[in-house]
Amino acid sequence: MESPKNRNIILIGFMGTGKSTVGQAIAETLNYQFVDTDALVEKKAGCAISEIFASQGEAHFRQLEHEVIKEILQNERLVVSTGGGSVLREDNCAVMLANGQVIALTADTDHIIQRVSQDPNRPLLQGNVEERVHTLMAQRKDAYQFADVTIDTTGVPVENIVRTIHEHH
Ligand code: S3P
Image (cartoon, rainbow, N blue to C red):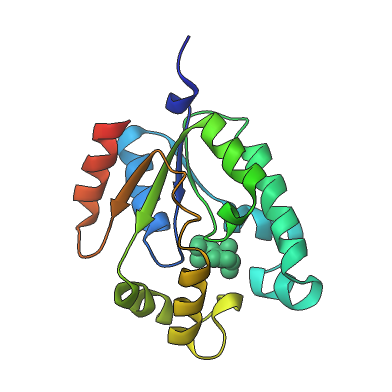
């Protein structure tokens, strides 16, 4: 029987590690469908992630995110870009491991700060962005380690990252 690891590619990693950019590129080369769990949560809620956090709180967002991950991973031939905090729920990690190859993208803190500063819409990074990134990275330092493969994206061209993922898939 075909291994469940071949069903899908699931990208995890902290905000700003390049999950969406890399995910879209790898989906194109493999002829898989690209899906972004943040976009699916917004569709389900009918509003932006920042509005979900503001009106219903983080716990409600996490519940929607969990439902989306469970639902979407019933499919095959997907490249799934997940929200950086999705790994905080163990049941999400278990569903990911059971339904695809989990690839963690990492990057240097400075690189992450530079990338996320270009997109001010993330509710968990309001206020002093540098401080927030340092705090959250420290809290989550072990959260991405369950991945099947880990790839450092710092300064690496997207096509090289895509090639590395190909080698593992
Ligand atoms: C979050 C990351 C975001 C989004 C939400 C919360 C997090 O996704 O899900 O703002 O907790 O790290 P990206 O990692 O795609 O930015």
